[in-house]
Length: 302
Ligand code: ATP
Ligand code: ZN
Image (tube, helix red, strand yellow):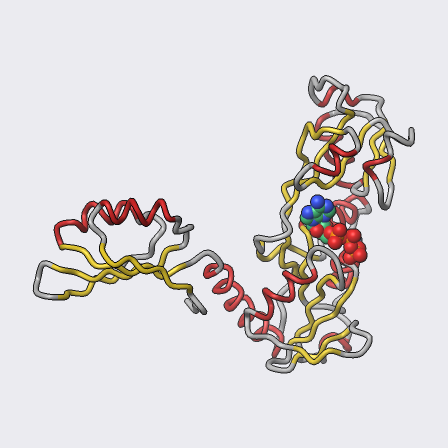
């Protein structure tokens, strides 16, 4: 690390300036108690509540900023992180960043998609074809694993129209709903990578003040990620109904049971991490739960 980086005692997190991950990344960090004073050019946001600053950049720049020590952490798609990691590996470089947490938004997959008219018989069919992609390193690594020699055509955007323009026979691109592929008469046939937004950081450890800040941020992040679908469930039941009720709460942490109205009536409260659907509430009611109440969880610190 350069001396300039070592002397920094504020934590710097890179997120996408605009695009699919920009708002959810900011919202997630805000839910960890961070807030920023916006700078006018919005490249740099100075942390107000904590010494944690934001750098707003293109997603493709995030792994490099971490590798160079310009940023400590970043929120980026696994697809971008893995592509740049594969690229570094091909160039003989050592890993310079790593995935620290998966964040549960920005879900998509890197998939091969062929014209709808093709009947798909498996990867061997790809030998000698031209494949358009913005992920040449991941595609090349996959082709090598499958033992296929094909022509990788690297494009920076509009990959899905390459077959119609005669630039390629098929594509390797990000897919979420599949609507863009369908609009271009393509169909996904194989998945190379399941992706979502991740927290990326350097391979090595932080030191000094930044180590403490990163540790605190991760602790809060883990709490925020856990509470995302967590709810506090409360109800009352007769003591003899409890054995039927507990199996209906497989995703609950050990419930707290309180005695009410004598020995036979209990109030139960449990932190549930799965989705509490109406159906589940009705199942609980049938099993003897009364006065069911579901409450949101504001914060959780393990
Ligand atoms: P930038 O200007 O920052 O370079 P971009 O155009 O490369 O932006 P976006 O289109 O905003 O990036 O996508 C950011 C990330 O969102 C992707 O890298 C991927 O991880 C995720 N993502 C989720 N669904 C999709 C999808 N259907 N298509 C593309 N990316 C998706
Ligand atoms: Zn990008």
